[in-house]
Amino acid sequence: WRRECARVLLRLWRHKHVWPFAEPVDPVALEIPTYFDVVKRPMDLGTVKQKLQNETYTSPGQFADDVRLTFSNAMLFNPKGNYAHDMASELNELFAKSWAELKTRIDLHRQEEHLTASLEALDI
Image (cartoon, rainbow, N blue to C red):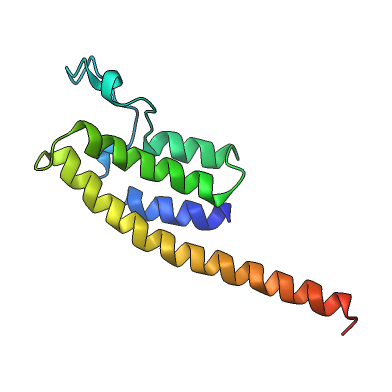
């Protein structure tokens, strides 16, 4: 599943508007001192990539939660109409579509494994 998650992340990474989400928000450099007052659990796609590469995630759901958190943080902090909010919304939609496809593949793979194990148990 990690390889499949990496493909989803790559699809996001190739989007032309991914750059605001590629690394942790720096409130000092961006002159947004209230960022950590609003965003309690910061996340970015660079951290997601690192966690995926380091096998920190123990399930695909953890990966998905962090990707969603990246975009929900941006939409929480930035008002609708703001570039970061709108790009987060767009990328979140792309992720939702990619995630649905990935989840279908993972579920099919699990069903195949279960069926194979059941057939083996029946000695067929």
